[in-house]
Length: 371
Image (cartoon, rainbow, N blue to C red; front, top):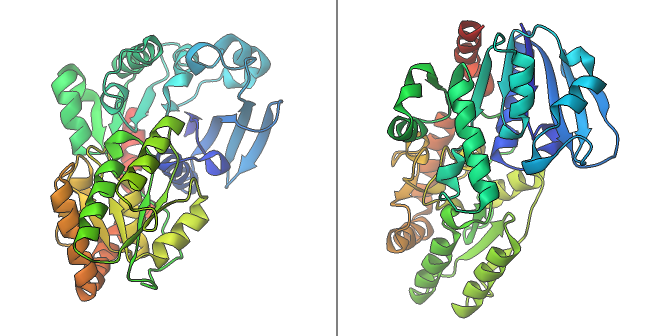
């Protein structure tokens, strides 16, 4: 099967959960024998290039310049088709992972080649339906793609519920398949019983503010817990979070480390007493799944797709946005190291069922049906 994959993130251009998932998925398809061509924006360089990866993955890297990308970051279809005529071929499937390739997907499809759209998040929901014209335009592009594609791949039942509420007419062409992980070599060592960890984007719905306020409640109880925050966000929001830390007199207990590459993140997870995922809403929860695979104990909100991945049998859970419940979970984790070890073992067992090779048969059936 010949597949054209359109993604903003792959391998070294992976900046978060969606990029990690796309990379794992594409290599899983490579092992299944798919012949794949990937179009990928490049952050470095000023010229396009072809690379070969895996067994038979061809990667076309396009620099993030105005020559190839225009308004709203949309790819310039005419330019790309003219410079790379080999893209104009009878693909068995066009797989879109991002909306900025939408014009190219429509054109190359010609209304004949099926388009599979993997939705990592519904933008209107994730960004709170903000009124800025550029964001509203992106929301519209995504929702048109939902209408025009032949199959919608959702990553959780929570996301399917959102689709059912807003666009029930598309449910018949929807498939829910979880994202997988490439099983890490790192293992939890429980090296430091007071070092807790947050990993992810710094944005309001991720619940970092709730976590900081919960840390303040912990300090009032006299427990000595330290929190390491790994991730980036908008400068103004990061500044707000740092000011909140200072106002709560937590400067000695909460440290911001910025963005770290995946290898360093996994090492931090392996050394942490606990990984905290305090999201108020979440499409899936790949960070939680990666932590479980390492064997790191979790404190996780029951928000969205997280509730499908993680249960009370393998983590300490709380209601998203409930700072007191989060503080109580932190206290329980601090006071009960043996409970953490038990939860960690059960969490790792569950994570092993989400290895990409375990999920491969389900993806294979989906793609063959679409073809």
